Image 1 (cartoon, rainbow, N blue to C red):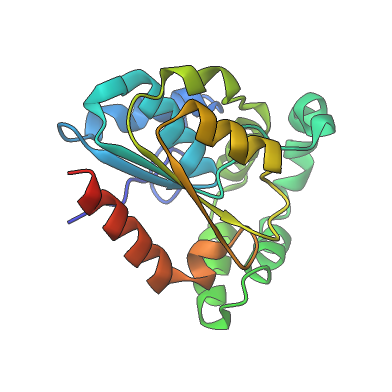
Image 2 (cartoon, rainbow, N blue to C red; image 1 turned 90 degrees about the vertical axis):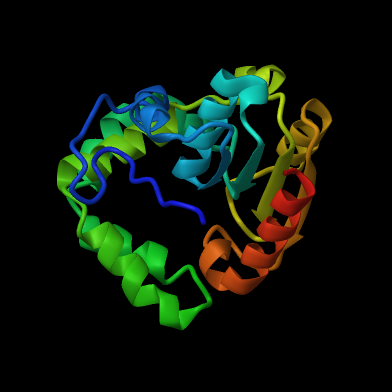
Length: 201
C-alpha cells in the first residue's frame, strides 16, 4: 500500500525554499523504514535526491520521465527571471500541460491540479526544476533503479538514459507518448512498477 506524498507549495502544504533539496528535506521525515520511492518529473528529481541521501536504506527508486537536468541550457540561467512571469498564468500552463496527454479522461484532473496551485507554489516548482542538476548524485545511488521514459518527451536524452543505466543498477523502459506518460499509460505503469518492486523486496 503506497502513499502519495505532497510537495511544498502543492495542495495545502506550505511553501519552502524553491529548491529540490528543500523539497527533499520536507519529504524525508515522512518516509517509512526502507522505502521504495516513485516520482514523476519534479517528483522524480526529489526522489532522486532522497535516494542519494538514503543509499542502501532505500529499497528501490522508480523515475518516471524525470530528467537529471532540464535539457534546455538557457533555462538554467534564465529560469529565475522567467518563472515569476510564467507563474502568473497558472490556467494557461494547466491547459498546455493537460493537453499533452493523449488520455482525455485524465485531462480535467491534470488541469485542476495545476490551475489550483498558488502563483507562489507554481513559481517555486518551476524554479526548483530549472535549478536542479542531478548528474552529481548518480554515484550516490546504491539501490535498484527503474527509469520509465516517454519516447516523444522533450525532457530526457539518449545520453541521459544511457548514463543513468551505466551508473546505477537500473533498467529502462520506454513508452510511446510524451511527458505525461503516467496519465497516458496508468495501467501499464502500475504493472511495470509493481513487477519491478516485487523483484526487489
